[in-house]
Amino acid sequence: MPFLFDIGGIGRAAWESLSMAFAMFWEILWALILGFGLSAVVQAVVSKREMTRLLPDDSPKSISVACGLGAASSSCSYAAVALARSIFRKGANFTAAMAFQFASTNLVIELGIIMIVLMGWQFALAEFIGGPIMIVILILLFKAFLTPRLVEAARRQAEKGVKGFMEGHAEMDMSVSEGPLLKRILSDNGRTAISHYFVMDWHALWKDIAIGLLLAGALGATVPHAFWQSFFFTSHPLFAKLWGPLVGPLVAILSFVCSIGNVPLAAVLWNGGISFGGVIAFIFADLIVLPILDIYRKYYGMKVSIFLFATFYAAMVGAALLVEFLFDALGLIPTTRSAKIVEASITFNYTTVVNVIFLIIAALLLVRFFRTGGPEMLRMMDDSGEHGHHHDHHEQIEHHH
Image 1 (cartoon, rainbow, N blue to C red):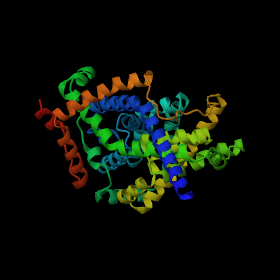
Image 2 (cartoon, rainbow, N blue to C red):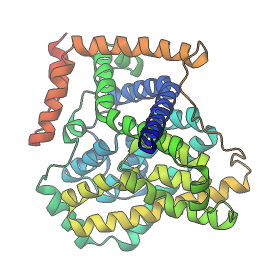
Image 3 (tube, rainbow, N blue to C red):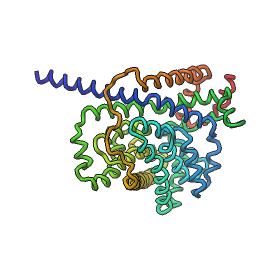
């Protein structure tokens, strides 16, 4: 009988975890489609070809351009890391390439939208204020500790072209650059490029999003609040403010989830008692999760990967602490811990109506994707990642018109 009782308990816990994961997915579905749609529009009109030319050094101008290009690119952490190596190999400055990488995962539209929906506008504001602060700290650390010998070691290893992950995604360029902005977006080639980028980003990120939701559901349903409260030292408010940013990235490293998949987990941690700055540090840390640390080792060598981990971690913690104290001083830290982690229930309400509208938009983009050689593009993108060949997708788009 005790055995049967345990099985029943495990079944209930599993059902609660899945219910919570689905509820969070339903809550953010429209936001995911909107975010990926806006990101696809931007990628369709911002060419990757100019990146190397625009990032020749680590001057404030180059770093600003790197941040702008990063914010305009895909939010997939793996693609950002692969693209950063690609532009570094083609001659871009190493520091500027790393700044691009940070902006690509921390300053993108879709991340802000998901944070607003699940956690509240204060968290999105903290992300977009903290992101540039983190990049500034990183640049200062690079200026102090990055030696020409380390950069040369990184370049030698990068030139070997060791396969990491998502190289095909990083290399693919389908942007439309002729004519006024609105005309480019509405043109046949523009709409095709948007549909291809939209599906490509989903293809790149769906596993991270699914794992993030399932982990968040499991932790939300099975880990008692008392554990989180003791782990995050909620009974010691001042220490908790310092502890949160220090431990947030370490939790992220062990979770293996990066990019947008981190946000549902962040919501669980916030409800559990982690400090405001700890949440921000946790979300910042998508570029130091274990699989990506291994990719740095392949791309740049062990010595440089250790240097990147140390400086990235320091920049994330420093920026999160500054955000914590700034928002505390301004009275912007939410007083209630009510991130949206709810039981599954689909009723005819605002969320359902908006989801249906955006699912129709997604369906239209999918139809165009399939009608304009999209599946072949995905295969070509995967081949590019396998063999290191660069493919320009313009010719294929033209072929379908």
